[in-house]
Length: 101
Image 1 (cartoon, rainbow, N blue to C red):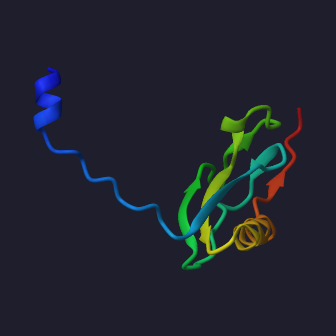
Image 2: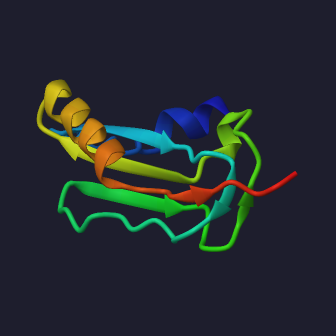
Image 3: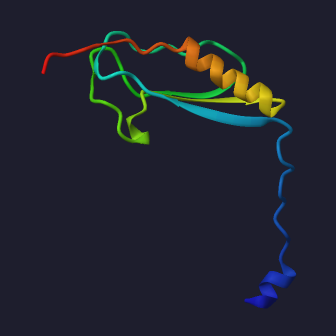
């Protein structure tokens, strides 16, 4: 086993990316989702998961897995990533209507 490790080739490890990334989990108020959330068309959004759709009935969020959307972004600096995450929290709307108990 040791001989195979000594004679084999060392795997190539790619250089780290020059950009930074971050993500935000967005939550909705409890109630019926009135409109499926839409993610802005921005080149710095690397991934978006919309986890609710119009008509879904949401309970009050109690854990991370109760997120209505999760969006990842990239940026050149930590400040840029944080700014983009904050902008998304303002731009992505998840309207709900309260349901009678």
